[in-house]
Image (spheres, rainbow, N blue to C red):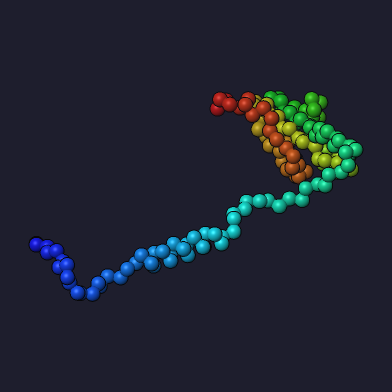
Amino acid sequence: MAMSAPKSGASEPMVEMNTTPLIDVMLVLLIMFIITLPPPTHAVKLDLPQDCAPNCPPPPPVKPTKNVVYVSPQGVITWNAVPVSWSQLDQNIADMMDPAKFADTPELHMQPDPMAPYDTVDKVLAKLKRAKVTKMGFVNNEAYRGEF
């Protein structure tokens, strides 16, 4: 295929459209669009407490009350290291959940022994669920590591 160079004196009209002005207009419009965008904000609106005078009393330290329920390998239930019966356990849970006795519901730490009878632990958990205990956690879970 032989290619010939265009003649220098050709008077044929140019068929291709000049796209340079179109690209310039497009870039100007893109820059205008970017400038008019609002800056992104990731703010969270909070109502902060107003500063009182320098003579404000310091807030009192909060120490949550914690109760520990332990189930021994023999099935004995203890409440804060004191052995309790099923009825005493019900009473202690009711006292703990009473809003008249505590301004804030105390925490309950459940600590069953790894060798405690499952039935006893299950019954204690069922009592806690029926009493609608919300602040509860299991303590000493590392004791169960590698048992099974």
